Image (tube, rainbow, N blue to C red; front, side, top):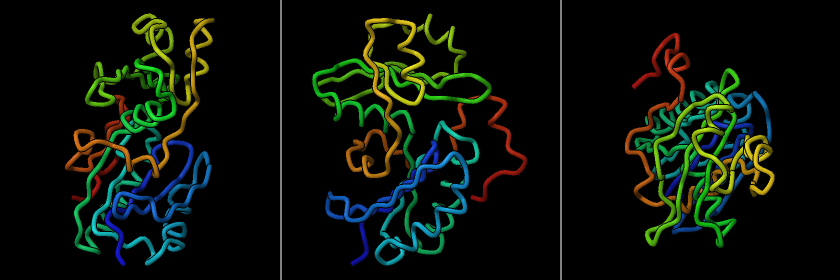
Length: 214
């Protein structure tokens, strides 16, 4: 049976993929790595049932690792073309916020803080509402000092730079979460991007040598 959705997550310091069918994760692979996503992704998919074949593809569009984002989207587009199935995207920070909401059900305010490029952090606040976890403001790429000044200590810090952020506020709770393809199962429809375009997060990083094929 072909799965409903193949999820590809390569935007952070891991490579994870999942097959989702009828609202459940039916297969999953995960490898931690600082680099080498391109070399690992296809062998990981080959180990999935039906080599990962699915009726649609969902891919992490960033912000995150410049190379990782491009690897994931390029693979998703190539597979979508080969299988003639739709390709959609999601944002890294949205996924982390949803993961935090599930991991910390008693918390209502989350600040996703992840490592960006050139010493900056990707930062975005989220709040829990009756309709679920929603963004309280657009994400920004900020130097640590600017991020701390802009957002303060009114949140639980989440993500790869959460500990570094919380170190400036002795009473602040934090959780070092990394994006996980399995957790895309819980993304609401409002967080699904109809077009999988890279989200690099910084102006200088948003100018690749050549555009990805349409």
